[in-house]
Image (cartoon, rainbow, N blue to C red; front, side, top):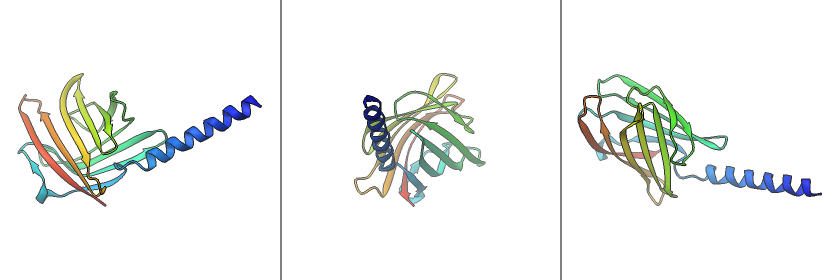
Length: 154
């Protein structure tokens, strides 16, 4: 009997976790609104960001244009727990960590060889239609850039 109760509690917990992730305001595809954004010269420009639930984690896919004008594509899968998880396809960072501050705010930190090269605050509006990213990045040559990118939910 205890085994059935434990199993039932486990199923309910997993279902609740899935619902929480599915209802996350970050989930979905976001397209850059260049007219509302202010990005410094030399910064990467992520034109599309997609957040999707992947099991008990989140997968973030970023597509855009690098400082060199070439197309970029990177992927990250992890949790909003502030821990570093690997990034693939991004020459600027090899790990990224997301930390959930509240239901509408994330902080992100990107590292290259263990050194922080990118910090960002990601905020989704109360109505869930706009995502704003305030970012600071340090290029390989040591130059710092800051910018604000505004995205619209698709």
